[in-house]
Length: 327
Image (cartoon, rainbow, N blue to C red; front, side, top):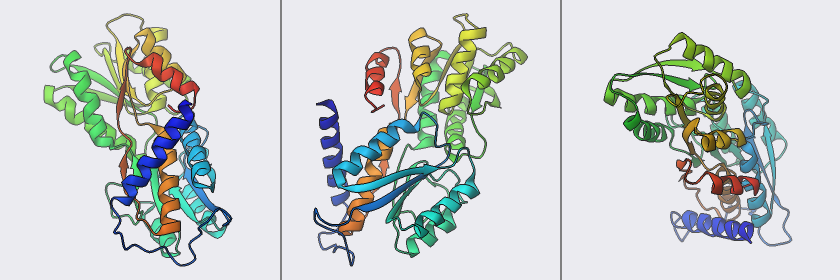
């Protein structure tokens, strides 16, 4: 019942949001596929680090929306952060006959050309998870968190517990991912309000290995008591480091996104809170946007995936939703 309710609500909300920004006179494109017997549209999601646990609810949202909209969807991507390979996958998806593409635009400039080229060939593109907020990009819309604003929100929540002029550890799990850079800028802008300084480390996407990097950094800077992270793997890594090597209550961490271990660390008090970007919505709404665009010429509209706080007060509820595939 929960799955049906969420699915129905999401489809209805998406349709209303998209219809509200399109003139009533908008006509379907030539050859638009309509009717139950029409050949299903084929859509491709193209991302980086395809096997990361973060994308499990994205895939669930994509599958649920595909069933609701009667389309076929494939979730494709690179094993790691490999922008040239990801660009090549976009061109291959066009050559393979996909009708629309949802693209994780992890670089603010690198995807500009291929997106424009794809749309010029009549294949609509929307972004999901990470968008290009910096340079002109032909993508039609985005379903993603507003990353710099989310970074400022994290800092605002953390600041009351950080002394004036303190030194903190900032982490990211990868270089060259615009979302992490934007979140970090937001965090730093907030820290400047209290003249807080920081040291930055890159942990990598393996949270267990990343925990050792975080622990080493804390040993090198014994005055640091707070870790603020910008992504899933490094948030988990920070909590793991505190759990294993710095069990004292004076240490704490906060960050972004979640994993089963991150939720466990929130329950244990090692991580104070994490900000969730609601990946299920990032899989669901692009399917609706692309299907309505291809069938009826409706212009997609950007949606903020949000920055919901997960802490000790709601972590049990979130864990249940994770088991059901929605968080």
